[in-house]
Image (cartoon, rainbow, N blue to C red; front, side):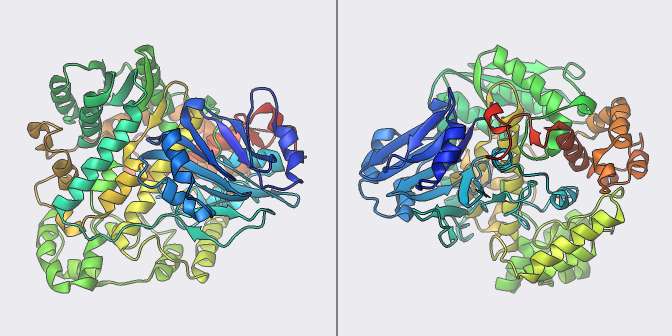
Amino acid sequence: MGGWWVMLPDTASAAVVARRLCQEGVRSVSHASGRPWLIGCWDARQEVSARAGEVRVVVLGRSSVRAEVLGRRLERVRRPSEVEQAVGGVAGSFHVLASVGGRVWARGTASAACRVFTTQIGELPVAAGRADVLAALSGASPDWEMLALRLMSPPVTSTVLADRTVWQNVHAVPAQEVLAWERDGRRALAACWWRPPEPHLSLKEAAAEVRTALVEAVGTCTAAGGTISADASGGLDSTSLCCLAAREAGHLVTIHWEGRDPQNDDGVWATRVREALPSAAHLVVPAGQSPDWFTGVGGLRLPSEEPCPWVRDFAKQSDLLQRVAAHGSRLHLGGGGGDELFTPYLAYLQDLAAAKPWRVWGQLRHHHHQWRVSRLSLARSVLERTSYRRWLLDAAGHLALAPQSGFAGMLGWQPEPRAPGWTTPEAVATMKRALRTVAANNPQPLSPHRSVHAVLQQVREGGNTVRVMNQTMQGPDIALPYTDDAVVTAALSVRPPEAVQPGTVKPLLGTALTGIVPAHILARQTKGTYDADFYQALRRHRGQLLALAEDSLLARAGLIDAQRLCGAVHFHANHADTAPLIYTVGCEVWLRSLEGGSPASVPHVLSQGAP
């Protein structure tokens, strides 16, 4: 898994970097001038390229576009910004890379499943699809301030600090923006290639768009034929993907791992899914026959460009991928992102109260009973209207408080971050300073609607996760169709109050897939939990976690107090207290994975120091 590419401007000075990169087995694409433009190693099956006159476009990733169609569309392109029209309506998850008369246009996905990064090597601007590749090229070191910020829970770096990476002087292009260079390499003015939709559609209208987008997204996964696999947890998100894939896949393999909690009914619903898909092959991994969470975490070394909170799941996910690979799977579908897209964030009540206050009270009656809070408390919370800047300042001031819970914790622009109890005062001060610095620049939220901003923040965390997972996992690539831009756009188009129906789980998704997912499965109203699996993993692997803490590189850097971390990792730990653990462990494992300052994943030719 995991390739890499580097993009160069159409200048003579780019030849020095190009010579360093152009080794045996490395692919190369030129500008119309003949100078090097794209260099790297990627799966040829993931590339669709076309040219017309001085226009060169490469679509890298999982897409529905065909080269001949793309070529015809390019005949009308005269300016870099017109490239977006040429890829309009293309389903999937992919980078769009273009050279138009030597002027460059590059972007990833709105969900952050594909990203673009940039840095300077001397006076030369260079871009890439991986931050660690640029770090190796430029000799960059880890950014300790960003590592401190990565300890916060829940995370905020995908929105609040979307232009920074964990490498010094390596910058990220925010997911909704494009990287544009003039022919001489000068950066053009920042421009957005994607904006979130206005949430204006009825449930029925939005469901029709979601259905089309999901069918096309899964179609990009099945189009190449052969065997694909999919998670079959029993939840509606993964079930929907299994039912969609079963209609088109040459051969589908589903996999379900059983949880340890006897009250978790996911297994019951997963059985019903298997019964509904008799033509697929179904793998069931009994409880105890797949690795626990945190298995092997003490010795884990991952070739990832940034810290990964899912190091907790690495052994289990690797085991599942190996099992489906043994059955011939070339691509594995996961339901990640579905919860975020189809469970409206409660801040929609604040949006509704501001726009149509007479409509919000009916919604509050339902939440009054669900959350068991007084109507007065509900009204006060919902009527609170803080700006995004004010939210950032408040979040900075609340870092050391106990985590928010219940109804109040689900309002605002996004869940407020907290510093874990084992963070040092110096690290907390760094977090506060960073949030206040961002606030001082009066940043704009991802959307003027709080609920849309919050959903996008969580979607981008998920997109970022699958991107990094595919850099590190062995076996078939993982696809999360719910993070495809078309699916995200369709889901965000619904009026949030219509996507909330008491007694119904994810009505937008259920309505969209009526007739594809069996009705008795769409009627599920429960959701499985895995607390028992978490606590057993904590008990069994506490020794490895303590060893990480006692010899912590984060502690040596003054970011965490190892003794307090050890004290927090015990058998009866409160779930809220241990929730930040995965972010701390992810940062610790990432630091231990560095070799001479660069991840082991970086190709050898890039590991020789800056040119």
